[in-house]
Length: 268
Ligand code: ADP
Image (cartoon, rainbow, N blue to C red; front, top):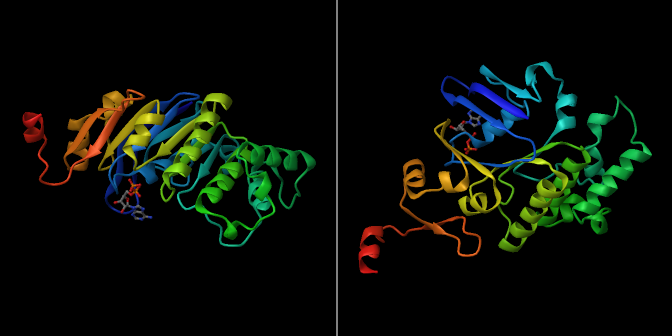
Protein backbone atom coordinates (compact mmCIF):
# COMPACT_ATOMS: atom_id res chain seq x y z
CA UNK A 1 0.00 0.00 0.00
CA UNK A 2 2.82 2.38 0.94
CA UNK A 3 6.20 1.72 -0.59
CA UNK A 4 9.23 3.73 0.56
CA UNK A 5 12.11 3.43 -1.86
CA UNK A 6 15.49 4.53 -0.53
CA UNK A 7 14.30 7.82 0.86
CA UNK A 8 16.70 10.30 2.45
CA UNK A 9 15.71 13.63 3.94
CA UNK A 10 17.56 16.60 5.44
CA UNK A 11 16.29 19.87 6.88
CA UNK A 12 19.72 21.50 6.54
CA UNK A 13 23.11 19.97 5.75
CA UNK A 14 22.88 16.79 7.89
CA UNK A 15 20.78 13.88 6.69
CA UNK A 16 18.01 13.16 9.20
CA UNK A 17 16.66 10.11 7.33
CA UNK A 18 19.05 7.98 5.33
CA UNK A 19 18.23 5.39 2.73
CA UNK A 20 14.96 4.21 4.27
CA UNK A 21 13.17 1.44 2.40
CA UNK A 22 10.19 -0.61 3.54
CA UNK A 23 6.64 -1.44 2.56
CA UNK A 24 3.47 -1.11 4.57
CA UNK A 25 0.75 -3.58 3.67
CA UNK A 26 -2.95 -2.76 3.77
CA UNK A 27 -4.52 -3.12 7.26
CA UNK A 28 -1.17 -3.42 9.02
CA UNK A 29 -0.53 -1.79 12.40
CA UNK A 30 3.05 -0.53 12.20
CA UNK A 31 5.02 1.05 15.02
CA UNK A 32 7.94 3.42 14.52
CA UNK A 33 10.26 3.44 17.54
CA UNK A 34 13.67 4.90 18.31
CA UNK A 35 15.30 7.42 20.64
CA UNK A 36 14.62 11.16 20.62
CA UNK A 37 15.91 12.72 17.41
CA UNK A 38 16.16 9.39 15.57
CA UNK A 39 13.77 10.65 12.88
CA UNK A 40 10.35 9.20 13.81
CA UNK A 41 8.35 12.42 13.34
CA UNK A 42 10.27 13.32 10.22
CA UNK A 43 9.49 9.90 8.75
CA UNK A 44 5.77 10.36 9.47
CA UNK A 45 5.88 13.81 7.86
CA UNK A 46 7.42 12.43 4.68
CA UNK A 47 4.70 9.75 4.54
CA UNK A 48 1.96 12.38 4.30
CA UNK A 49 4.11 14.69 2.13
CA UNK A 50 4.36 17.46 4.68
CA UNK A 51 8.05 17.00 3.86
CA UNK A 52 9.43 15.83 0.53
CA UNK A 53 12.53 13.59 0.64
CA UNK A 54 15.48 14.91 -1.39
CA UNK A 55 16.33 11.35 -2.45
CA UNK A 56 14.17 8.34 -3.23
CA UNK A 57 10.41 8.22 -3.52
CA UNK A 58 7.27 7.11 -1.73
CA UNK A 59 4.50 5.31 -3.57
CA UNK A 60 0.94 5.23 -2.30
CA UNK A 61 -1.01 2.47 -4.06
CA UNK A 62 1.68 2.47 -6.76
CA UNK A 63 1.47 6.22 -7.43
CA UNK A 64 4.34 8.50 -6.41
CA UNK A 65 3.34 11.01 -3.71
CA UNK A 66 5.07 13.65 -5.85
CA UNK A 67 2.40 13.16 -8.49
CA UNK A 68 -0.52 13.42 -6.09
CA UNK A 69 -2.24 16.58 -4.92
CA UNK A 70 -2.52 17.30 -1.17
CA UNK A 71 -6.30 16.80 -1.40
CA UNK A 72 -5.91 13.43 -3.08
CA UNK A 73 -3.46 12.33 -0.38
CA UNK A 74 -5.79 13.58 2.36
CA UNK A 75 -8.58 11.35 1.04
CA UNK A 76 -6.38 8.33 1.65
CA UNK A 77 -4.37 9.38 4.66
CA UNK A 78 -5.18 11.25 7.87
CA UNK A 79 -2.67 12.53 10.39
CA UNK A 80 -3.26 12.85 14.11
CA UNK A 81 -0.57 15.24 15.34
CA UNK A 82 1.32 14.90 18.61
CA UNK A 83 -0.17 18.02 20.14
CA UNK A 84 -3.92 17.68 19.78
CA UNK A 85 -4.95 21.28 20.34
CA UNK A 86 -6.58 24.06 18.42
CA UNK A 87 -5.57 27.73 18.37
CA UNK A 88 -9.21 28.82 18.36
CA UNK A 89 -11.93 27.62 20.73
CA UNK A 90 -13.86 25.77 18.01
CA UNK A 91 -16.72 23.47 18.97
CA UNK A 92 -16.01 19.75 18.73
CA UNK A 93 -18.42 19.34 15.76
CA UNK A 94 -16.67 22.11 13.87
CA UNK A 95 -13.28 20.46 14.31
CA UNK A 96 -14.57 17.05 13.23
CA UNK A 97 -16.21 18.64 10.17
CA UNK A 98 -12.82 20.08 9.16
CA UNK A 99 -11.95 16.47 8.35
CA UNK A 100 -14.36 16.76 5.41
CA UNK A 101 -12.42 19.61 3.76
CA UNK A 102 -10.59 17.38 1.20
CA UNK A 103 -14.05 16.55 -0.19
CA UNK A 104 -15.37 20.09 -0.32
CA UNK A 105 -14.73 22.55 -3.12
CA UNK A 106 -13.41 26.05 -2.54
CA UNK A 107 -15.86 28.03 -0.36
CA UNK A 108 -18.27 25.12 -0.42
CA UNK A 109 -20.41 24.42 2.65
CA UNK A 110 -20.82 20.99 4.20
CA UNK A 111 -23.56 18.88 2.72
CA UNK A 112 -25.98 16.66 4.68
CA UNK A 113 -23.74 13.74 3.79
CA UNK A 114 -20.72 15.45 5.41
CA UNK A 115 -22.68 16.09 8.60
CA UNK A 116 -23.74 12.45 8.65
CA UNK A 117 -20.15 11.21 8.22
CA UNK A 118 -18.93 13.57 10.97
CA UNK A 119 -21.69 12.28 13.26
CA UNK A 120 -20.69 8.67 12.59
CA UNK A 121 -17.06 9.54 13.38
CA UNK A 122 -18.16 11.09 16.68
CA UNK A 123 -20.29 8.06 17.48
CA UNK A 124 -17.37 5.72 16.83
CA UNK A 125 -15.06 7.75 19.08
CA UNK A 126 -17.82 8.22 21.70
CA UNK A 127 -17.73 12.01 21.74
CA UNK A 128 -21.29 12.76 20.55
CA UNK A 129 -22.27 13.84 24.07
CA UNK A 130 -19.55 16.54 24.04
CA UNK A 131 -20.05 17.58 20.43
CA UNK A 132 -21.28 21.09 21.31
CA UNK A 133 -18.51 21.79 23.81
CA UNK A 134 -15.55 24.02 23.01
CA UNK A 135 -12.28 22.17 22.39
CA UNK A 136 -10.45 24.20 25.05
CA UNK A 137 -12.82 22.93 27.77
CA UNK A 138 -11.90 19.29 27.23
CA UNK A 139 -9.42 16.98 28.94
CA UNK A 140 -6.34 15.68 27.10
CA UNK A 141 -7.98 12.28 26.51
CA UNK A 142 -11.17 13.86 25.12
CA UNK A 143 -9.17 16.16 22.85
CA UNK A 144 -7.29 13.17 21.42
CA UNK A 145 -10.63 11.52 20.62
CA UNK A 146 -11.82 14.67 18.85
CA UNK A 147 -8.77 14.62 16.58
CA UNK A 148 -9.24 10.93 15.88
CA UNK A 149 -12.87 11.71 14.94
CA UNK A 150 -11.64 14.47 12.63
CA UNK A 151 -9.23 11.97 11.04
CA UNK A 152 -12.06 9.44 10.63
CA UNK A 153 -14.31 12.05 9.02
CA UNK A 154 -11.64 12.24 6.33
CA UNK A 155 -12.61 8.62 5.50
CA UNK A 156 -8.97 7.63 5.12
CA UNK A 157 -7.47 4.22 4.54
CA UNK A 158 -4.39 5.08 6.58
CA UNK A 159 -4.02 6.92 9.87
CA UNK A 160 -0.64 8.31 10.97
CA UNK A 161 -0.29 8.86 14.71
CA UNK A 162 2.61 10.75 16.26
CA UNK A 163 3.14 9.81 19.93
CA UNK A 164 -0.59 9.37 20.51
CA UNK A 165 -0.38 8.30 24.14
CA UNK A 166 2.05 10.97 25.37
CA UNK A 167 0.48 12.87 28.29
CA UNK A 168 -2.35 10.38 28.81
CA UNK A 169 -2.78 8.48 32.07
CA UNK A 170 -2.82 4.67 31.84
CA UNK A 171 -6.63 4.43 31.75
CA UNK A 172 -6.82 6.88 28.85
CA UNK A 173 -3.86 5.18 27.14
CA UNK A 174 -5.68 1.84 27.15
CA UNK A 175 -8.96 3.46 26.06
CA UNK A 176 -7.27 5.29 23.22
CA UNK A 177 -5.30 2.27 22.03
CA UNK A 178 -8.44 0.07 22.12
CA UNK A 179 -10.09 2.60 19.83
CA UNK A 180 -7.12 2.56 17.43
CA UNK A 181 -6.97 -1.23 17.51
CA UNK A 182 -10.69 -1.50 16.72
CA UNK A 183 -10.24 0.87 13.75
CA UNK A 184 -7.46 -1.40 12.56
CA UNK A 185 -9.15 -4.76 13.18
CA UNK A 186 -12.80 -3.88 12.48
CA UNK A 187 -12.53 -1.17 9.83
CA UNK A 188 -9.31 -2.51 8.29
CA UNK A 189 -7.56 0.86 8.57
CA UNK A 190 -3.79 0.86 8.18
CA UNK A 191 -2.14 2.41 11.23
CA UNK A 192 1.34 3.90 11.42
CA UNK A 193 2.17 4.97 14.96
CA UNK A 194 5.36 6.62 16.21
CA UNK A 195 5.74 5.83 19.89
CA UNK A 196 8.14 6.35 22.75
CA UNK A 197 6.47 3.63 24.73
CA UNK A 198 8.18 0.39 23.79
CA UNK A 199 5.81 -1.78 25.81
CA UNK A 200 2.79 -0.27 24.07
CA UNK A 201 4.44 -0.69 20.66
CA UNK A 202 5.24 -4.30 21.51
CA UNK A 203 1.67 -5.08 22.64
CA UNK A 204 -0.29 -3.38 19.87
CA UNK A 205 1.77 -3.36 16.68
CA UNK A 206 2.06 -6.15 14.09
CA UNK A 207 5.47 -4.91 13.01
CA UNK A 208 8.02 -2.45 14.35
CA UNK A 209 10.60 -0.23 12.69
CA UNK A 210 13.45 0.66 15.03
CA UNK A 211 15.28 3.81 13.94
CA UNK A 212 18.79 4.77 14.96
CA UNK A 213 20.19 8.11 13.80
CA UNK A 214 17.86 8.27 10.83
CA UNK A 215 18.52 4.74 9.58
CA UNK A 216 16.52 1.55 9.99
CA UNK A 217 18.35 -0.46 12.63
CA UNK A 218 15.85 -3.33 12.64
CA UNK A 219 12.44 -4.04 11.15
CA UNK A 220 10.27 -7.04 12.01
CA UNK A 221 7.79 -8.45 14.49
CA UNK A 222 7.93 -7.13 18.09
CA UNK A 223 9.72 -10.36 19.06
CA UNK A 224 12.40 -9.77 16.44
CA UNK A 225 12.87 -6.08 17.23
CA UNK A 226 12.41 -5.76 21.00
CA UNK A 227 15.41 -7.70 22.23
CA UNK A 228 17.79 -6.67 24.99
CA UNK A 229 20.66 -6.39 22.51
CA UNK A 230 18.78 -4.20 20.02
CA UNK A 231 17.35 -1.86 22.64
CA UNK A 232 20.62 -1.48 24.53
CA UNK A 233 22.51 -0.82 21.29
CA UNK A 234 20.06 1.78 20.00
CA UNK A 235 19.02 3.54 23.24
CA UNK A 236 22.38 3.14 24.99
CA UNK A 237 21.00 2.04 28.35
CA UNK A 238 20.64 -1.29 30.10
CA UNK A 239 17.19 -2.88 30.04
CA UNK A 240 15.67 -6.19 30.95
CA UNK A 241 13.47 -7.86 28.34
CA UNK A 242 11.17 -10.76 29.18
CA UNK A 243 7.64 -11.75 28.17
CA UNK A 244 4.45 -10.08 29.24
CA UNK A 245 2.92 -12.97 31.24
CA UNK A 246 -0.58 -12.33 29.84
CA UNK A 247 0.08 -11.65 26.15
CA UNK A 248 3.47 -13.35 25.70
CA UNK A 249 4.78 -10.27 23.89
CA UNK A 250 8.22 -8.83 24.74
CA UNK A 251 8.17 -6.65 27.83
CA UNK A 252 10.83 -4.11 28.77
CA UNK A 253 11.83 -3.27 32.31
CA UNK A 254 14.04 -0.26 32.89
CA UNK A 255 16.99 -0.82 35.18
CA UNK A 256 18.30 1.62 37.73
CA UNK A 257 21.95 2.36 37.18
CA UNK A 258 23.94 0.02 39.41
CA UNK A 259 21.37 -2.81 39.22
CA UNK A 260 23.62 -5.01 37.15
CA UNK A 261 21.76 -7.70 35.18
CA UNK A 262 24.46 -10.35 35.47
CA UNK A 263 24.72 -10.04 39.26
CA UNK A 264 20.93 -10.31 39.56
CA UNK A 265 20.85 -13.42 37.38
CA UNK A 266 23.65 -15.04 39.38
CA UNK A 267 21.91 -14.24 42.68
CA UNK A 268 18.67 -15.82 41.44
P1 ADP B 1 12.06 12.02 16.70
O1 ADP B 1 10.65 12.19 16.26
O2 ADP B 1 12.57 10.62 16.57
O3 ADP B 1 12.35 12.61 18.05
P2 ADP B 1 12.61 14.04 14.69
O4 ADP B 1 12.16 13.50 13.39
O5 ADP B 1 11.73 15.04 15.38
O6 ADP B 1 13.00 12.84 15.67
O7 ADP B 1 14.02 14.74 14.51
C1 ADP B 1 15.09 14.14 13.80
C2 ADP B 1 16.22 15.16 13.67
O8 ADP B 1 15.79 16.22 12.84
C3 ADP B 1 16.66 15.78 14.98
O9 ADP B 1 18.06 15.92 14.96
C4 ADP B 1 15.99 17.13 14.97
O10 ADP B 1 16.74 18.07 15.69
C5 ADP B 1 15.95 17.46 13.50
N1 ADP B 1 14.79 18.32 13.17
C6 ADP B 1 13.49 18.02 13.41
N2 ADP B 1 12.69 19.00 12.95
C7 ADP B 1 13.50 19.94 12.39
C8 ADP B 1 13.29 21.20 11.72
N3 ADP B 1 12.05 21.67 11.52
N4 ADP B 1 14.38 21.87 11.29
C9 ADP B 1 15.62 21.39 11.46
N5 ADP B 1 15.90 20.22 12.07
C10 ADP B 1 14.86 19.48 12.52
